[in-house]
Picture (cartoon, rainbow, N blue to C red):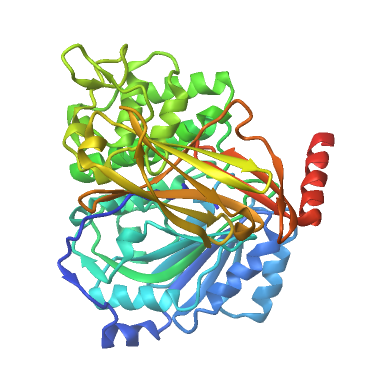
Amino acid sequence: MRRPEPSDTPDTARTADTAGPARTAGGAESARAAQVGVVVIGYNDRAHVADAVRSALAQGPAVAEVVAVDDCSTDGSAELLERLAAAEPRLRVVRLDENSGGCGSPRNAGTDALTTPYVMFLDSDDVLPPGAVDALLAAATGARAEVASGLCVRRELPSGREQPWQEPLYTAHSVLARPTQRPRLVHDTLCVNKLYRTDFLREHGIRFPEGRFLYEDIVFTARVLAAGPRLALVPDRVYVWHVRRSAEQLSLSLDREHIDNWKARVEACTLAYDILLGAGQKELARAVRAKFLDHEVRMYTRELGLRDAHYRRAWWAHTREYLARYDAADWELNPSAPGRLVARVVLESPEPRDLPRLRELAARPARLLPPYARTPDGVPVWSDDLTQITLTPFLTRPVSVLPLAVDAELQPRARGAHLLLRLHELYGRVAEADPREVEVTWHSRSDDRVRGRATVPLTEAGASGWSAELPVDLAALGAGTWDLRLSVRFADGAQRDVTAHALTGAGRLRRRAVASARYGVLLVQPYATHSGTLAVRVATGVRGVVQVARGRLRRLFH
C-alpha cells in the first residue's frame, strides 16, 4: 500500500447536523441496487490481485462493476485478470500502456472507465470485508451524502494483528453537512475507505496527481474536502489494509529510509494546505498544518536515529525550510503538543541536535526526558541554550496528559528477571499530583495478548523521582516479542498511561540465557524500539534457542 501510517491521537470533536444509524429503509433498498463501481489498481502483484478483485465482487448486487487497472505489469497480472474477467461479466480489465510509477494515474483511468453513480478504490494487496459496500452505500443514499466513509483496519501479516485507522472518527453513525464541522477529517487521508458520488468527483474536477507522485491520497483528500461535500460516517469496517513488512519491495509509506520520501511527504502536505486555503477552507488548512506536526514530524523524528548523518542533515534542513512558512496562528494552537515542541527545536537549530531526547518526545505517548532546564527567573525551557522554547504550558496542564518519563531496565537473572522503574519529576507537577503506584503489563507484539499484569507502589527516590521494582515471570510471557506498558496512578485517582524509556549502555540490553522449570532454558533479549521504548524478545526451550542462533548466523553470513 502506498499510504501514510496511522496516528493514535484522540479525536474529541462531536459536531454533526444529524447522527444515528444511516441505514434507513430507503437506504437499505438503495444498497441492493447495482450502483457501485470498484476500481482495483495493481502493478506486478499477481500473488494478491485476484483476492482483491474477488473481495470486491463478493460484495453482492450493490456492485455493478469492478474495473481492474493493471499498471503495465510484467509478472502475468494482466493475463490473470483477463482470465477472471472471462468468467465474470461484472469485471473489466484496463491495462495502461506504460507504467505510471504511482497510484494516481491508474485510479484516474479506472474512474474514467466507470459508468456507475458511486465509486470505491481498492489496492491489489488489500481486501474489502463482507458488507463494506452495503454499509457505505446505505449511509450515502440515506443521508444524501456525496462521500461516505468507514473504518479502515491495518492488518499486519503474517501475524494478523490489527490496528484501526483513525478510529475516533468512526465510533458512531453521523452525518456532516460540511467538512469544517469536524476538522480532524484531514487526518484520514486514505481514499480507499470511502465511497464517492462519481458525478461529484467529475463536476469538481477532483482527480489524483498523475505519474510517480508519492502520497497522492493526501492531495486527493484535500481536493475532496475543499469541495465541501456532505459526508456520512459509519462505524463499520469497510477496508482491510494489509501491511507486509517482510515483502521484497516495501510500500512507499513503509520505505522511508531515503530523503526523497520525506520530500515527497512534505510536498503532498504543502499541496493539501494550498488547496484548502485556496478554496477558502482556512480552518481545514490550519488543521493540515497541525497534522503535519503531530503525525508526519513525530513519525520521522522517531526514526532519525536509524539514518546516517547525511540523511539527518538533509531532513533537518528541509523540515526547517517548510516550518519557516508557518505563521503565529499555526504555532498558537496547542503549543505544548509534542509535535510542536519537536518542530520548534528543529526550527530554532541550524543543525541536528538533541536527537535522543527528540525521539522520546516524538514517541506515543510522548516522554520528555531530563534535563529540565529553567531560566534564571524560573521559567521552564527546553534547554539552557534554547531558552526561547518555553515549556510553561506544562505548569497548568493536567498530569494525565503530561509527557511523563519513566526509565526502565529489565535485568535477567539466573532464574528469572527483575524490572526496575524510575519515574522522573517534571517541574514539580508530578510531586504535586502525588504518584502512588504503577500498573505494569506486557503486550504481545504479534496479537496484543496481555501478560504479567501487576501493580506495585512507587517510592520516593531522592528529590527528582520515584522508583519501583518487581519480578517478571518470563516463562509466563512465553515465546515472542513483548512491549512494556505502564499506567501511573496518582493520589486523586488520576492516571497517565505511558511507555518506558529503555536504559542502554553497560550491558543492560545484552542477550542472556535464563533457567526455567517450564522450558528448561529461556533466551532473553531486552532491547530499545525505534522510539526508545523497552521491549523484550523471549525464545523458549532448546529449540527456540537454536532457532535464534541459526537466525543470527544467517544474518552474519549474509
